[in-house]
Image (cartoon, rainbow, N blue to C red; front, side):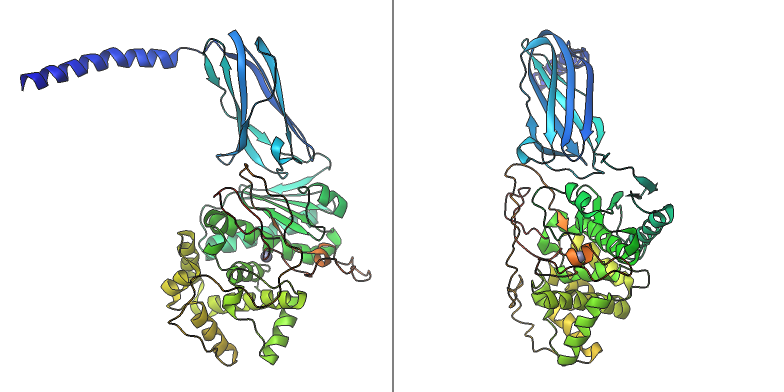
Length: 461
Ligand SMILES: [Zn+2]
């Protein structure tokens, strides 16, 4: 016992002796002094981070780290410089090249800091400073609140106001009716000119891209002319729904977490305040309904057809199923389902828990409602992962080079050229797009890679 008391006493004394010295060490100001740290954005080329620092011994190591929403982007960058007691170091972050930073959309907000070491072993990390990627090539008009910022460069104030208000309604529906909590602030940029829009996108973007969202950055870029307001309002709401859902569920848990038909169906459902169907999609749906050629729901769990009319049908049908779920079982149940998916349930598990049905059974409940023959499905032999769809894949799978070491958001380019360049009022119809799919949000297809989990992950277009 006496030995234990002695040991305890010794530990207390030792602790008392160590604690102040540890404290003293951490509170000693570093001899490394930062005169300035700045950044300059030159969108769409890149941004330059500059550090001016000095120390009692030659500064030998300088590394830059850039964060976005608390996640370090890419590597720590070590610009070359000649070691000296005073150094001025710059790193040119390229929005075009992965190896030198990589693409960041306008509207990205983040932080950066420098790590500095000198020859005497002194180390200093600068406090995090904020940066914002701004596109100064245009004179933007802005309307914003805490939740949303809409920027546009063509059209009058009424135009921006209309987009802002529609986007807020779409956001509020998800927040208030479907219980999506803690939605991060969103930025919407509307480019009126197609060339300017493409200059704002990452290299290798599809030529048919008409809108693109970056859920990790909370940014949506859309190309539409103020003359096409109706299309623009639908597209803005559609992309905003994706951006919110992907940031909360898909982007976090991967593609498997949320059935694609539900993701797309909800985006279409939320395009207008009255949740009215999209005309083109509705046409395809009605035709298939008459012929009883609707696509099995399970085939739309992970991919949509690449064939144009089948894709239209897939969207129209997905919308119908989502509408059925909300109408028949209520918004609360749908909110519950999203919540369960957010916590990591698989598509069938989530449906089973909330509705007591798997995808096939839900499909049959819907088919009964719309008056088409039920499908013969076995509830005892369910695949846990969707089978490959029977229709042909797109011939133009995503060819975008995949970075190998960077945490890159999976870009979500969306509607394609026909809608990307809708006819101006009174003009002749838009040109036929070169892409295989017309008029649709493209958040549906393709393969790519994402390094964040170190495994292949589907990239949608
Ligand atoms: Zn979509």
